[in-house]
Image (cartoon, rainbow over all chains, first blue to last red; front, side, top):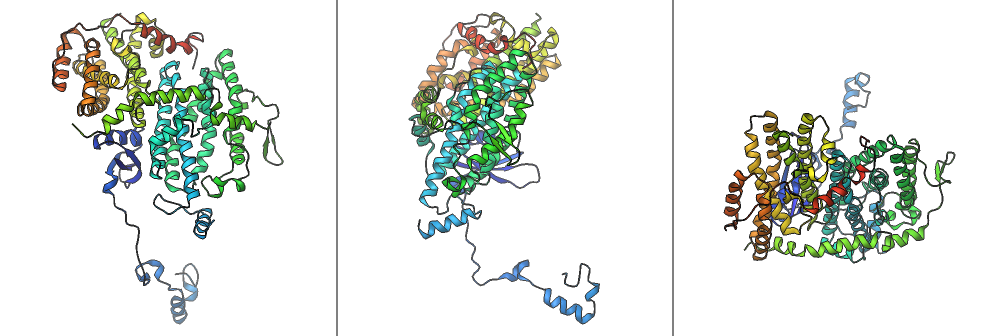
Amino acid sequence: MIFEVFRQERKGQPFQHAGSVVAPDEQFAEIYAREQYGRRQESVALWLVARDDVSEIAEFPDEFDLKYRRVDGYSIKTRLREARERAGTLDMAPGGSDAA
Amino acid sequence: MDARANEFLEYVQSGGQVETGDWMPDEYRARLVKFIEMHGNSELMGVLPERDWILRAPTLQRKLALTAKIQDEVGHAQLIYRVVEDLGKPRGACLDDLVSGKAKFHNVFHYPTKTWGDVGVIAWLVDAAAIVSQKALLKCSYAPYARIMKKICWEESFHILHGRDVILAMVTGTDEQFELVQEALDRWWEPLMHFHGNPIPAEDDPMFIWRIKSQGNEEARQQFLDGYVPQIRELGLVVPDPNLRKDEERGVWLYTEPDWEKLRSVVTGHGPASEERLAFRRLSRQDVAWVERVVLAEAA
Amino acid sequence: MSKRTDLLLSIADDELILGWRNSEWTGIAPFLEEDVAFSSIAQNEIGHARALYELAAAELGTTADELAFDRKPEEYRCAPLVELRRLEWARTIARHWLYETADEIRLATLKASDDPEIAGIATKMDREEAYHRMHAEMWIDRLLSTDDGRSRLDEAVDELWPYALGVLDDELRWKLRARVEARLGRTLPEIEAVPRGVHGAELAELWEEMTLVRRSAPPGSQW
């Protein structure tokens, strides 16, 4: 059986995928993972998950370009310049007249 | 090459990363497996020249350090064979091909170790040569392999320090101890110069074309010489190549051209210790065949 | 030599020699994972040996390395169980399990010692050896779970039994018997223990090779 190993480097850090071990059962897997990913005290914690129990999701459709939900969906430069021109504050903007 | 493979080639050449489940051209997959398998074989075979010295280590500290170093190498073999297995070749098949002589392993592990001087030279200089290649592999286009290289490089950093410490103790010890190091260096210089492979230009090297390797063989060798010849010479040791010198104008190390035919002969199993080591591995594999059966059996 | 020193050297020598025996699988264990596991066990054992030698060295006015390597073979205090050469796998597991079980019994007594240094080191060793025991027990489970495994284990235990008894002092041997019999579900024969004090040819051979490099330079050379 293949077991995926996730390790936490320090308390507070996320668990990250570190690799996999082959073992006949969970008992062996624990010992082997401990050896392979912890013998140098390089991890504070490990998670073990049988590979069969891991499911992958790798497709995220965005057919109609719903960019409004992200920062890159906004371009305020032109309107901001207009507003500053109208208010006569073009030269007052910190960072320059076109800064956001 | 068909259009799809061409697209893939452009993708990896512009830095694209490949994961296990991705489509890949047959040639890429085949070269990848062969290369990574050879690396795994090398880590495993690398244990054999060094293991006897655990018993012979002259202090408890050295005994511990050497045990840990060799342990890392076995651990690396495990990591590397896992990658090969996920690409479709089971570990058992790799080991079968290794002991039958079908698959190769690095030249340096075909040589005997004769003295404690060898132990120092191997840990310091052979591991240094290896780490030059391994750092370049951090950029391998095949991501699972690049990822394990991170762990491997981190663990190997103590090996080189340990090796250098062993050497330093001897070169500041008795005259006989100094001689032990020089003599070992004399024997290991040729295998070290062979290590990075013949100087095929990167653009002609399929491994580089597919970005499995990210540097050419000669570039790796030059990096090794740049880093380590000064370290060797500052200890008063003599590199046994009278032609070795750096052309400061061109920034290039010049040296006596190694015998590339000899390298070919060594890696195809004709090195001084090749057969003995393979035989040893073959025998021990037979002895423990029953263990796999018992461990993989359903509980009674 | 005081009783204390004798005790320290007995355990240190056990751990040093067994540490090597466990390393004999390096590169050739049935699976790579076991290679790595036994390597850790071996390092722990040599680490224990070193700590014990240091305690004894303080008393004797010498160093750990000198105690570990510069005595004559007859001066070593290890139990014959650890001296046996690289055994095949079933015997390796049997020895590993028998030794760890015996050692747990021995350490339990030492943890209760009035001597704080001995109690302290025994506690630390026991904490590390908990993992060795976990590993050994896991293998015993596996071997007992198939007919083939069980018969190989039984054969191995029977052969090593007199040596296993010899790891412990006379008064503790019944504890080892009780544990082993309970675990295997059968009684073991009444048999003479192979005690400390008499070494086989294997130790002399091992000593020869172990001290080769060290003896090649004048005493006190740095390595």
